[in-house]
Image 1 (cartoon, rainbow, N blue to C red):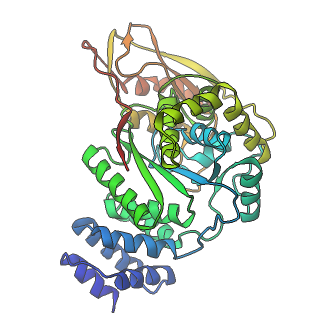
Image 2: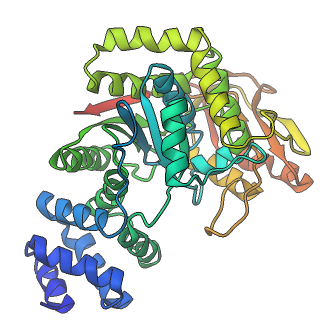
Image 3: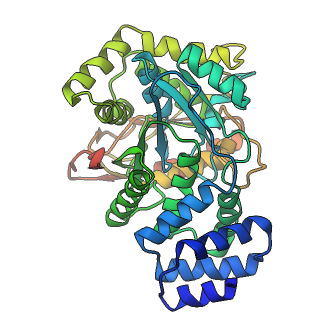
Length: 425
C-alpha cells in the first residue's frame, strides 16, 4: 500500500477502506507522506467527496492520532457545545454557565479565532491575568469543584488534524464537507463529553453560506457522533446578521454578561436553544428545560458561576479595559428599513482594527469592536445611530463609511431574521 495508490483510488471515485485511511493518517503524522502528496489526496477528496463510512474512519483515525481526554474522573454528566464560527457569537458564555448552574459538568476546551470569526479563548483573555491553559489535573479539579472550566486544548490532541488543517488552509481544500466534519468531530470526540450540541452556522457570516450545504454538514457531524456512541445533536442557526449587538472580544463578553443579567435579545434566543437541546438530550422535556433556564438566569446563579470561573482562572478584575475611542456614533445617511446587514463585512472591519488575526501569531486588541444598534427589519431615520465604534486609532474614524455600507437601507420592511433555522437529532 502506498499513498499513490490511495490518491489514484480517490481520484477514480473509489471508496477507501478503514485500513487505507488509517495508513494515510499514520503517514501524515509520521511525516512519511509528504505535504505535496497529502495535498493531492485532499484535493481528490474535495472533488470526489467521501462516503459516510470513509468520513467516520477518517474521524476516528484523526481522533486517535494523539491524546484522548478521559472524563471518567469528573463526577456527573459532562456537557459541551461547539460552534462552527460566526460574528458576535458569544453563546458559550451564556449557555455553559446556565448548564453549570443546573448541575451539569461543563468541561469545555475551546480555540482561538482566525480571520473574521472570534475565538472563545481570545474573548476570555479580555480579563487581565486570566489563564486559558489549565493542566489536565487542574481542569478536572475545577470542573468537579466549580462545575465549569473553559480553556484551551491541553496535551497532544488530534495532531493529524493540525497538519491537515494547515495544509487545507493554503491549498484551497477547506470547503469539503467530509473534511470539515472529520476535523471538527475528531477534536470533539477526542475530548468527549457525555452530551454534545453543535451550533452549525449558515448565512453571510458563516463558513458555509448555503443552507443545503449547512444541513448536510450538520447531519454528517451528528451521524459521526452517533456512530461513535455519543449523544449528539445540532441546531442550525442564522449568521445573516451579527448574533449579538456586540462584535469584538471585550464587547462580546459584556454582551454575554448582559444576557446572564436578564437581557432578552437574539444572543439569548440562540444560547437558550442550545441549552434546551442539551437538557432535552439528558431526558428533560423542552418546556421544563425552558423553565429551568429562566430560573437560573433570574436568580443570578448562572452569572455568579461565570464570575467564579473567571476569578478561579486568574482574572485580576472583572472590569474590562476601554479603548481610546469609546462608542463613537455612526449615523444613518438615509431613512427606510434595514433590509440586510453584511455580517462578514462587519466582522472583517473589526478584524482590521486589531480585533482578529490573519495569522495565528498575530496579537489581538481586545478593546476594539462595534456595537450594532439596528437589525434587519428595523426602521431607520436619517441621523439615527446604526452602530458605535470602539477603536484605538483615530484613523478608524475616517473609515466609518465601511460600517455604514454594511447596512442596506430600503423602502420595504423585510421579515426579521429567522435565528433557529433547523434541528438535527
